[in-house]
Image 1 (cartoon, one colour):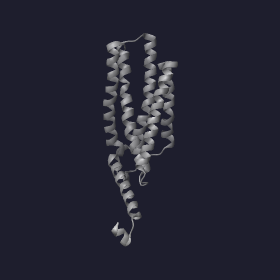
Image 2 (cartoon, helix red, strand yellow):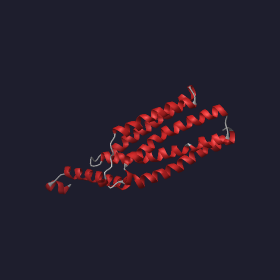
Image 3 (cartoon, helix red, strand yellow):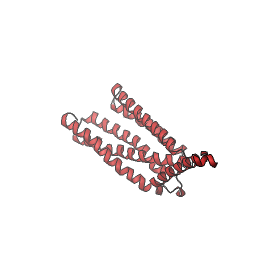
Image 4 (cartoon, rainbow, N blue to C red):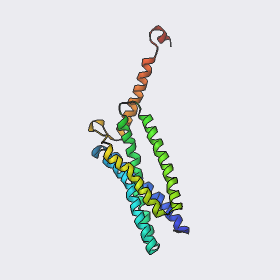
Length: 203
């Protein structure tokens, strides 16, 4: 849309995605210990490809039949998938990182690396998507980005095993426990290095 309608739709895109993202994160926190990490993480990963496919279809219809209020609303509704993907991915990658690093005492470092990788990927994706849209078209950009998003989704589906086991405790509590264990291990290592004997007592 153009003018006031374009501004309204742009604002609704952000609001709809953010509201759905909050709800999706809540679902992940409640059910990640029930269904495991992998099914929920795959929902977040494949939501990007599904959204790109739907947008390609809607843009094709718009080019053939012209723009309409119905198509504008339909395109806006794809932000539901954007919120689902952001909520599921943003929550599950933290839980999976916690599972992988459990017992190593390196949860903070591992989470920092995965967060940095995700931030770099998001920045590059935004640049590449805009460049493709300007040089080719929005339709072609969504086709290419849709295929690219299938790569990590399929790799995770077929190459990464389930990281959660019922004995882990699951959910956000396990992350807090992991942080506490990591702090205890660090404190224990510091105590081991502390001076002993009469000199240690003076210090």
